[in-house]
Amino acid sequence: MVSNGNAFLGHNKSTRVKGVLYKEGNKIASFSGFSAGFKGSCSVLGRTVDALGEDISVWLKKTTMNDYIGQ
View 1 (cartoon, rainbow, N blue to C red):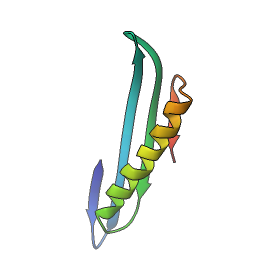
View 2 (cartoon, one colour):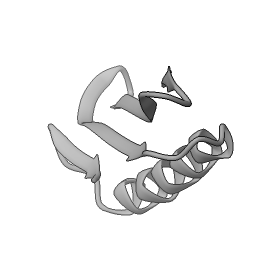
View 3 (spheres, helix red, strand yellow):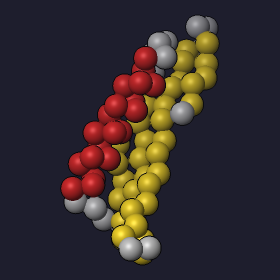
View 4 (cartoon, rainbow, N blue to C red):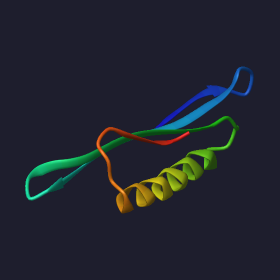
């Protein structure tokens, strides 16, 4: 998670994720992802995590190698 900026310059909040799925010790799928919000409230970070969590649950139903989720 990144949360930087200030009231004068604006805020930049984002969350980046990366995951690997193993089956019986073998790597069978992987993903990376990114979600961002540009508001002043830290609740934005919570919303990005919720959105990425939903994306990951969809990815788990149809896994692929080097997939990209999020925005």
